[in-house]
Image (tube, rainbow, N blue to C red; front, side):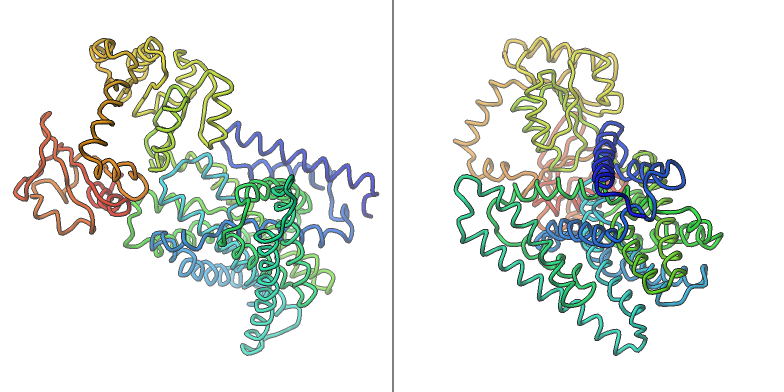
Length: 621
C-alpha cells in the first residue's frame, strides 16, 4: 500500500532532511557524502527500521525516479564544457572512449559468465556500470585534493560516461522489452531513441536560449526567472521526448544540458549555483530512497557470482582501463593506481536500474529485475564503501596529494596567494580568526579553518604537521613573527614565509631563519618591474594560466650528468631551463652547463609544457 498523502509528504521531507544532514557530515568528517547517503538508506529501509519499503511510493516511484534522473543528467551535461574537453590530456579522451569500451565489454562478459545471465541483460548491467558519475567523484575530490591532471581526468570521465552510459542503457533496455535481437533492428532502435532525444533536446535548448537572451525576464527578478526557466526546460525536454519515444527523455535532457552549458547564456553563475542546490536535494532524496528500497535478498540471491562480478569490476576491469587509457601520458604510477582504485559507481546506475526494474516487473520479468537491481547495487555498495569511503587513505598511501601549504590570514593577500596556489593544483588551507573574513574566503571556494593562527592546536588541526610550507600573511608583524616561531619549533616545515609590513622588522624575521617578504620592498619592486620590464611583468601576471615558472630539484637519472644542450631536445616545445642553482649560487646556464644531483633548476614556458617538463624531470612527483 502506498503511504497516505500526508504521510508521504512527511516522509519525503524527512528523507530530504536526512540527505542534507548527510552532506553536512560529509563536509565535517571529510568523507564523501555518498557513504552517508547509502548508509542512511539502508538504515531507513525494510532491512532495519522499515520506514521506507517497496510500496511506500506506490505507482509514483517510476515518475519520481525518472524526473530525478532528468535533473541529475541535465546537471552533469550542463557542466560538460567542449573547450575543456579539447584542452584535456590525451588520457581523458581515452578514458571516455577506449576506457568506456573496456568497462562495457568486460563487465558484460563477467556478468554473463559469473551469473549465467543472458547477453542482453548482461550488457544492460555492463552499460550502467560504465558510469562513475560526478555525483560520486565530486565529493571525493572535495576531500582528496589531488593534482589538477588527476581531478580533471576523473571529473570529465564521470560527466561524459554518466550521460553516454545512461543513453546506451536506455537503448539496450528497449531492446529487451521489445525483444529486438537483430543488429539492424538494434541500430534502428538506437537511432530512433537517440535521434528523438537529440531533436527534442535541441528544440528545448533553442527555446530556452532565445528566452534567456532576447526576452525581458523581468527587470527586478531576472536571475530567479532564468533559473526557473532552465530547470523547467530540463523537465519539459525529458517529458516531451519520453512522450514521443519511450525512454528517449534521458538523451533529450543530456542534449539540452550540453547545448545550454556551451553557449553564452545570461546569469550563468546564478543558474549553475541554483541547479547545483536543486541537484543536491534531489540526489540526497533519491539516493536514500533507492538504497532504502533495496532488499538484501536481491544481493544474497546473487551468491558467489555477485561477489566475483564486483571484485572483477573494481580490481581487474577498472585498473585495466585506467592503465590502458593513461599509457604514455604524464600521470605517475601512483596517480594511475589511485585512479584505478577510486572509481565508485553512484546515482545514475542506481536510479536507472531501479527505474528499469520497476518496468521489468510490470512486464512480468521479475528475475531480470532482481538480477539487475542486485548486481548494480552490490557493486555500488562495495565500491562506495571501499573506494569512496577510503579514498583519502588510498591517496595518502599512494602519496598523490600535493604538498600541503598552510596560510595564516585570509585577507586580500592570503586569499590571492591561496587562489594562485590552488590554480596550480596545490593543497592549500587558510587559517583565519575573523568570522566575516572566514565567510568571505569560503564563499570564494577556499578551505578555511576558523581559529587563532598563534594557537598550536589550531595549527595542528589545520594540518601543520604535514605541511611543507607555512606562510603567514596577516597585517600584524607581531602575529606573523609568533606564528613563524611556533611553526619552526612545533612542526618544522621545509619552508616558512612571512609577510613583513614594517621594513625595520625584516632582520628580526631573518634571524629566526624565516624567509621575510617585505610588503614595502615587494611593492617598490613591482613598480620598478612595470617601468623597466613591462613585457616580463605582463607575462608573469599570466603565470598559472598561459605561462608558468616552476623550480625542481635534480634527482632523476634523466638529468644528472647531462648538459643543458643534451636535455633541451627532450623537453616539450615552448619550455626551457632558465636558471640553475648550486651551492647558493644561481646562474643562467649555457648549453655546456652539466647538471649535478641536488641542483635546483627553473623551467619557464607555457603552462602545459612546463607541467610536462616537471613530469619528465621528476617522474616520482
